[in-house]
Length: 338
Ligand SMILES: NC(=O)c1ccc[n+]([C@@H]2O[C@H](COP(=O)([O-])OP(=O)(O)OC[C@H]3O[C@@H](n4cnc5c(N)ncnc54)[C@H](OP(=O)(O)O)[C@@H]3O)[C@@H](O)[C@H]2O)c1
Image (cartoon, rainbow, N blue to C red; front, side, top):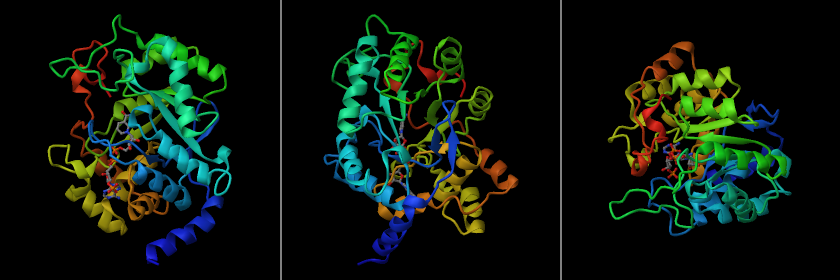
């Protein structure tokens, strides 16, 4: 038996009593500041096997994670559901774990929202979600092809278009029906988030956006704080394996490395700590038990004000996830401010 396995077993025995720091949603619910990401990475890199995610979710729960980030479009909800079935009721009670899923771009038609949510619930083996997010503010053509494309590789948009507020109204009904405890948005820029805040009967609890030291999103954070919206950072490590940021990884940034050395932590832990210390929820993805553990060890040190400012100063507005296949849509978010 390896030292890591022993360590995980030890942590597992104590994990059920660990209360990880959490953000308080406008609903009053507590959303752990650390969650496990379960997305596949870039478009077209879906794993041929969902076993790594099934194993990762089990390891994460044993390690003390109490928040799992999913989406229908990750095509991994059944694997996550199998892992939850093994752990919920034994290692953790359902009420003590926070489960998020997301409504995909091909499900924006108001009639498709309820069936999509029900499918996610069935696949996850749950009778409610803690949080359901509109994955992206642009509607694509209805159907089961996740990335409907025309001959030029462009996303086939919904015809007629479905304004995101129409989709939102159907999401509000999921709260009324008790299928989801809270609703929110993802990849919404400031003005899109403000539109939902202004016109929604139920206000968004969360906006999940890409954020890491090269995409700081300080204006969005300010607007969110002013309006009681919690921000979740996706790709919080800058998706290092993929080198999407033109070969530059925040984990290799000399300033991040130097701060990590000072605190005897890893660059990944520093990137995650910087986010949670400014009130941002993080959902790093890993299928490696060692890195799942590493990413959870961010609540036992404090970055100084100077460290925080140094990291925020690395901003380059560099974005990995661009959904460029629909960048001609008027609601494509990345022309606006974040
Ligand atoms: N709302 C949206 O539109 C959206 C878009 C993208 C992602 N997301 C969510 O955000 C989650 C995370 O984003 P992401 O997967 O794009 O990026 P990420 O979490 O920044 O990076 C994941 C990559 O980092 C590696 N990694 C994990 N921990 C590490 C560590 N401590 N040191 C070095 N490398 C490490 C992982 O490899 P190993 O597995 O080998 O450790 C994996 O390749 C997704 O899983 C998904 O849940 C949401």
